[in-house]
Amino acid sequence: MRSKLVAGNWKMHGGTAQNQDLLRAIVAGTADLRGADFTVCVPYPYLSQAQTLLRDTHIRWGAQNVSQHDKGAYTGEVSAVMLMDFGCHYVIVGHSERRALYGEDSDTVALKFQAAQVAGLIPILCVGETLDQREADVTEQVVAAQLDAVIELAGVDALVKSILAYEPVWAIGTGKTATPGQAQDVHAFIRARIAAHSPKVAAGLQILYGGSVKANNAEELFAMTDIDGGLVGGASLVADEFVAICRAAKN
Ligand code: PGA
Image 1 (spheres, helix red, strand yellow):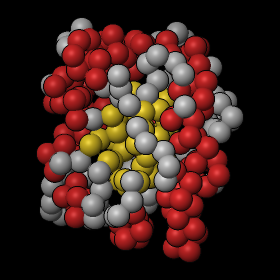
Image 2 (spheres, protein in one colour; image 1 turned 90 degrees about the vertical axis):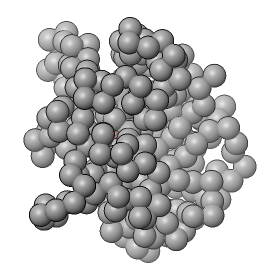
Image 3 (cartoon, protein in one colour; image 1 turned 90 degrees about the horizontal axis):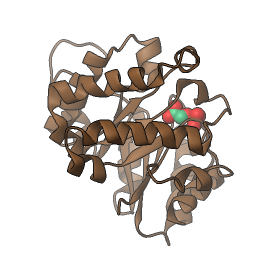
């Protein structure tokens, strides 16, 4: 049985004072929950604060991006070893906002995935189609290509120490959630594609759903066979909402 994971993706939000309130509320609100994992992926400047406030708790923390390089003249970039230095457990790679707004292609994402693992981080690899792609009925091809880039570079066994997140781009920040059935179909497709390489790796892999996960839809999404938790954007900034989503993962 796979356990569930709920990961908050704060994106470019936060501030020292509000983070402190939010993190404390998350720790307190989930203290009685066992058997599921919870994490927050915060902007780089707040990693130190997350480390200070979360180090002795059951909540893990991580980042939202990482360089594919290990060091050197890469102004503005942050390496995986640096993230390890701040106690990160996870790092999101290939988020659709990075693919669309910062031109990260699947080959670059695969290099970031690998760089994260080499340093000892667990990459949360995001895949997902745009609305145009869904309407053109190429969702599976798009998701497969994003996934295959990583498998080709790192090998299928690399997925053992990773998390996948299926995030349909049309559902991110739009309030338009994929139906549990729509999400389950893609999750099952992803798992089957990995199973073609290794049934064992596929069976153990946690695949999160992301895209307008809220307190009021989390439970039905998380009830689907191949949905192992959520990657949560907007609702991860509101303590009560995020705690309620964490609770839904436990039910
Ligand atoms: P959302 O974002 O929950 O605000 O839709 C999800 C994500 O981008 O990871």
